[in-house]
Image 1 (tube, one colour):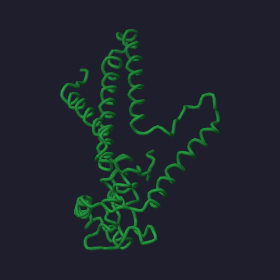
Image 2 (image 1 turned 90 degrees about the vertical axis):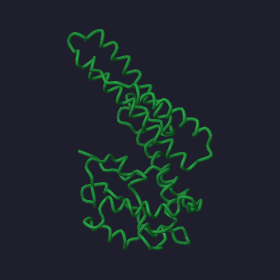
Image 3 (image 1 turned 90 degrees about the horizontal axis):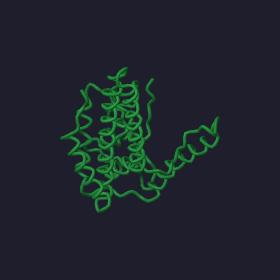
Length: 244
């Protein structure tokens, strides 16, 4: 059974806040997202809902897609209720509302107080601290899978590639031992799965770097990483093949 998650990456939230202009996204509505005291007085809304009970739910969407920047916008309570009318406010209409609103603030992003962002960061840190605490109480400590909560996305992507390399080595051993009896598995299924996983992870890295650069356009290290990743991916797109 699918687990529904509302966990929104901090970078997505920061960009969303900046592009909101501190206003409800509904046309001609000037209701603020945060009041003068830094209190959230609007609602963070999903265009395509998190769960089947919500509006415009799409079962084909992953939790990552559901909580992505492209699927989120801020609305005042009134217009959040108005847009519950899915016959009038379709996915396409909601995306149009979001795009029209954010285009006004793309060049002049609204700057939020440090206190707002600090509170968001605290919430995220509290979650990972809880994860560390839960793991410290693992029911079988000597067999617990280690979780390093301090690793960032790029480090996790690198680690995933290392695991895939190990899987490739394992499959090479299986290839020698089981080629005759398990040909389709070791010669077709596994190599194709590894290829697809590598491509997906490389694509994820590029998407992450692109999103990151929107917040740090002058970060030369990120720009260099993105340039290299894109060049490698172009070669992948041209030459990667499936075993047949």
